[in-house]
Length: 607
Image (tube, helix red, strand yellow):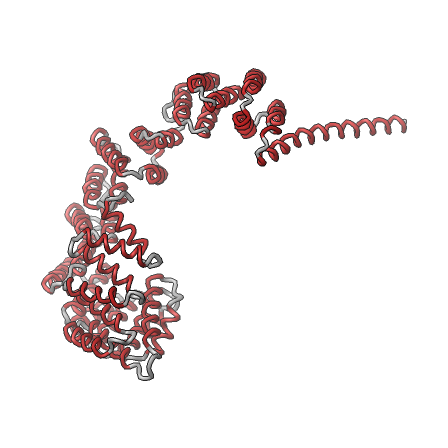
């Protein structure tokens, strides 16, 4: 009994060892073949891959086997092997046929290869749709996009389903330059799944050429005309136009959609805000005015009434020089808004805007203070709004040359808004106030804290002012030059422009060899630009470029000149020349990426 058990145990162990060896041997064939293949020793690979493929099909091994056959030119043996495998492994016979065709193609037998490719597609069972997809992927692997397309179309015919593998087919059409078909596939898929974001991502990848974008826009207009009740096409066109920053054209489409599908102006309102963010003030005004006219009883009416004035205000502020007549019209618009909607929580921001126009553009500081105080009374329950008004009042005190009143208000907001963007803004204004009054040590201490602020804009502003103070103090014991410069900067803040420019001229003569001299020219240039004195701005910038080419402001001066020639003088060639100079002389400049983009836009490149 015991002997029998012992013998049985020995036999079982023996059988196990045999099985393990067989498995290990098969595994080692594949590993060995891979190792030889990586070393490029094809003469040792062919027989090993044949052995592995006879036992278990693997696409990677088949690809590698064929690549080595082509390299060694052992075609006769390979044909016998492939023919045998076609019959022995019916499940993957079509792939053996495909790579047989690949081998023929690589030996210059294009017609024979084409027949094999056709044969491989015909070998797929009409019920096995995934096999068609796999075959298409393999054709793509060997850069035969046309055969890959045929495989997908055959799958559709077999299934009787035109929506099958749309994304894959769109990619193949894009690859082969069949833009119209690619657009059709993606648009029909978009209509089917109603997922704009997915389709938009694909179009962003596929529509890189200007000619393809023109086709896309044309096809969308045609589809909108033929199928006006399908909103997807209009939505895609609006998306495309906003990508191109053509907000006026986008508004026309959004308005048509709104009227047809009764969206109550919501999408038009969103478009208006997007246009405003992108400084297309006319399109923003059109959008908000449409809502005001068509939805006078709607929820968006009061917001649109305010936003249309905001858009006009931004337009006025960014048209140099800013005209007081235009500012007074804006204030009149705000007054009409308050008369219509009343002074309440919905119109608090309108009151703030009106106060700032009075203070900074009309120099009516007392009127601005009264408006802000009224707003504070109405919005007393809104703590953030109260703090914003306190910052505005602090600014007005600075305009009135009462810095200590300013710092009191800024400090109150700092305390109540700790570690918030509004609190950081208060700290920045406090630091600027210390800078204006010549307390550079205290200003720099606050600015160095703010350089780590979570708001990038505040951190950048703090860093720039900190660097200005650092570079121009400590060089002489009196810091006279920097104090004079800061006091002139305050005059400009207070809108005493002519006085400030006269003092800047005197300061430059007095300190023309001081490290501050390029900053004086930079401040003059920016001031002239705000006044609309474009040539005088360019003249001062040119001095920086010529005499201070190795200093920190040289690339800023070049960039500002390029912008002036582009936007004010409308001199395309000169602005391109200056953007190009930035790329050549200051490749590490923070402006280089934008300079390259603007240069390409002006040249007419598709971005």
